[in-house]
Image 1: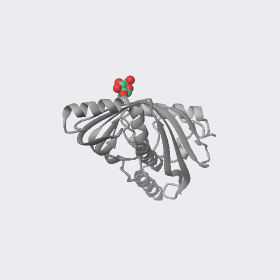
Image 2: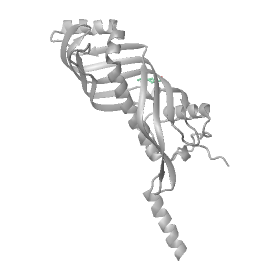
Image 3: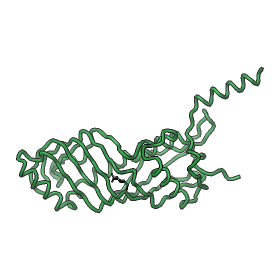
Image 4: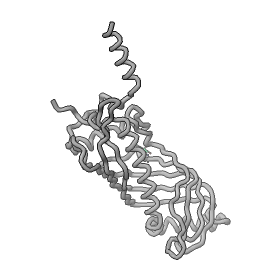
Length: 251
Ligand SMILES: *[C@@H]1O[C@H](CO)[C@@H](O)[C@H](O)[C@H]1NC(C)=O
């Protein structure tokens, strides 16, 4: 009798603490085996572009944002442009290749580093812009498409252990994520950047011909947006998947 209750209680508890687990087809690595871990992460990204709810991984092929500030005009500085996306959908992270990782040790020490490459990111949204860009005044609101090609990124996160009593498992928790992004090309199409269609087209052309200057203006804003995305994606996984369960159990 007491054994039955015990079994029932275990079943109930199992239902309560839905701990994340990697799918069986994903090969686990030994902690610290950086090459193996790179392969494993790439397999997860390639096999599950729509995400993997079991481990808290969101879809990577289309990520939606709201109210993304890319740059803010600051008086008495060279930054004379306010650019904001009221809605923004970013496509293309599903084609990311991780190139190297650091810090994925069996015993969590300082944190993690991930470096990788995304061939093309397509951004679609509704923008609002005001101020000066490439010395020219602009004021517009409308639909925008932005393509970032050859995106090389490095993200670093500090991590601490999070020993949970509920399931007696060790989790990892990150606080701040810092990413550095470089690109090989930028192509934009901002609709209604100026009142007149012809002027608007010329302005887009000017931006595309001088994309490097424009990128330098926007890079800080893009980096901080990327920090937030990376932090959200990584935190959700770490919240669901116990740190120990990411690695192969060494007997
Ligand atoms: C991702 O790669 C696939 C296969 O090569 C391609 O069809 C798709 O257009 C790529 N996505 C983006 C946003 O470039």
